[in-house]
Amino acid sequence: MAVARTIPTSQIPDVVTFTILSDGEEIPASVPIRNFIIQREVNKIPFAKISISDGDPSAETFPVSNEEYFIPGKEIEIRLGYRSDNSTLFKGLVIKHSNRISNLSAELNIECRDKAVKLTSGRKSRHYEDITDSDIAEELTDQYGLDKEIESSSVQHKELIQYNTTDWDFILSRIDLIGMICLVEDGKIIIKKPDLTSSPVLDLLFGATILDFTAEMDARNQYSEVKSLSWDYSNQEVIEDTGDEPEMENAGNISSADLADVIGLESYDLINSGKLSNEELKEFANSKMLKSRLSRIRGKVRFQGFPDVKPGDIISLNGVGDRFNGPVFASSVRHEFAAGNWTTEVIFGMSERWFAENIDQYNISAKDGRLPAVQGLETGIVTDLEDPEGENRVKVKLPVVSSSEDGIWMRIATLDAGSNRGTFFLPEIDDEVIVGFISNDPHHPVILGMLHSSAKPAPLTASNSNDEKGYVSRAQTKMIFDDGQKTLTIEDASGNKMKFESGGITIESSTVLNLKAASIKIEASGPTEIKGAVVKIN
Image 1 (cartoon, one colour):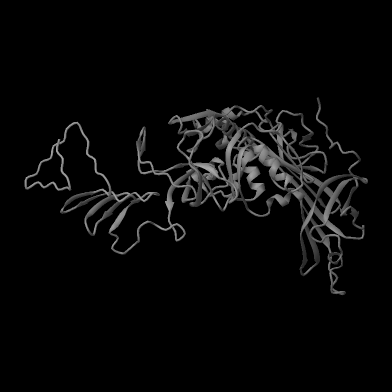
Image 2 (cartoon, one colour):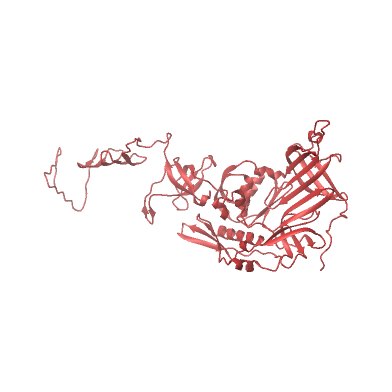
């Protein structure tokens, strides 16, 4: 079947027309719009930038800027088409309003963002229990009154922490790990797995409809196998899974397998030292394999303005050579109007990088997508000691995350630990502890130690001589080492005491001292003295 040699616009594309509305009211045609761009992209907030001729030096003012059309907070709609058959390509809020004067001209520049930009404002910390990633996305988008269409995810998380990050970044970092993408359309959040087998919405042809084109394939990001690994402390073993090949139509005539052979890496390993479920491991590996395949061919193509291609669509490239002909995934769509002409540019393919790497590319935790990360340590308050799963964990709330909830379960780093042996010192409920995180991942915390303060003072008084060390229990049972006196004292709250010192060992009891054994031998090299009100020897 022959490829169409024209863009299938609804009208003859000889006259470009547009309207801009502010809070539903059309901007007058007398407002001199110079140019504008509209950009939509997978996993990004859509935006529009409008440039307007403004500024009258004779009147010493900016008349359009002075109007109410473009003050921040106004809802802007841009419709674009041919011969007045216009389609809405953008709806959003005015975010920036700036006046500019140069030697040659003066202008008003307006930047608008989709309403979903509200998700990007302010860093938040929260604690979640028994929740899926799609549930999190639903809950957070509801808080901003946004419309939504969210595909259900299956991985159930017993506990998750959102740590010091925007709601947008948290949603994107979570869905990225399970192979989903986020599309934003006029205030509506769409979260789903990409459809890579759908029919192309547009056929483009070199020599006819393609104005500009660039494409590349990169062997470095193609893997023969993606493997995810995690430490299962319940069974004391490493568990792993491998990613499946995504179902997709491929452009070009060099396969991912052929490109992977160029480098020859046996397996691309995703390592997480925390405990991930088998289902998490599978999704983790699948997502990275999907990223690899979407990055096989990347590039951009520009053509006459067309309103019916969106991020997440498939377009078909034709006449660009055997290496690149075929269906490609549109990850970004940019419309540009200038000098009476309208062009559309599509970026196809996607980066192999995790969304987390865009947040903090230099953080080692970003390399396996496990972000937003926790940098350094955190203080916590103990809330529960009885682990329902028998993993010897302690429940701790992090006050900076949420002071009103009970927190999450954490393992304890102790002096010695092994099968039916080791030290067993649990903090008390309401004690303050210091918490670290495996691989900086807030979902895998470990208690590193307990903390004293003026509110919870130590049982001994510190001094520069630092002679006394020891342990004091809640019931005032004590074991005190005194390097100054060279003694070891064991004492309980009832006054029973055993003291080791250079002159010997002293055992004291406030009531009764019982020694009982199958046989007892008392031997001394010097005099032996036994005293009592009544001494009975049977």
